[in-house]
Image 1 (tube, one colour):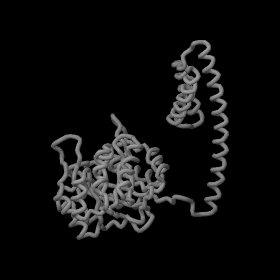
Image 2 (cartoon, helix red, strand yellow):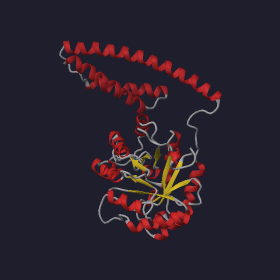
Image 3 (spheres, helix red, strand yellow):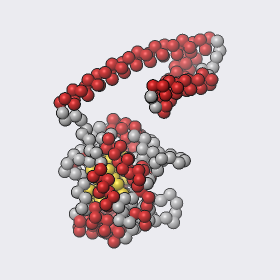
Image 4 (cartoon, one colour):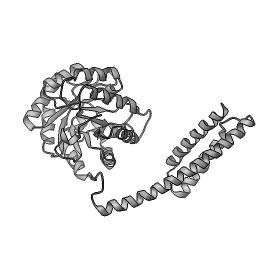
Length: 357
């Protein structure tokens, strides 16, 4: 998939991109005052605002529609900020382009529906406009990749993904769980694709935004989309997760920007030495896993010959308990230990089931 690098179409440098603006365009005064203040933050490359707001339940603020686009157009003219809005259908695309919106984005609720994504893709054929695509609400990597592919097949080569976290039922630290392994896997599949993080929607509260933003940059994401409002406590949507422009300025100044690869030859040599040791340990682990699987096959044949079930609950409970104790003794995370045990156990069950067939 031929996708243009972010710095060739959205920013003039390879520094992390910053997209900011209110969750929703609520009034002309609110839009213009926020745009004015954000225009004074050099890192802000795009001014965002929700024009159509897909809400979970009716009778909530659902956006100002075309009227809001006029306010964004004025903000662009007065303060020189390029603009971006969420689109959910072909009519949204037509109106956004009519009012000179520079970049479109597809929201999480739209990404889940291939019919809607395809409608947007069809409306973009022959149009040269960048498109950013948020992950689907639930942790479905293939659905995310599919949406990206549909937009690319429409002839759009200026594409970025936006990681906004995934919905989990119940109470959690974050509004949407980041599950960082999924955007990392997305980058593994589509190495040219820029990935921008949306800490506002992951965090859900302004107190956690800095933490999430730094984590995103630590794993090499290409930018941040952070909601900003001149009076966030009075915002008509997502009030708890919006920052004032002054708070955004401080957040940006406190972020640590890291190099994506060592620039010092000495640092590179030291990392290569560490990686060589990791490679040796990993190879040894493969030998140990092979020996473990050989034993699993012996156990499976014994169970088969003596008419014993593959899954043994008491043994599995014993494994979870003892491995957690061993992890504690060595200072290894219990969560990490349990995940490893789960993977090994799943493979053990698979191997033994095959022997029984």
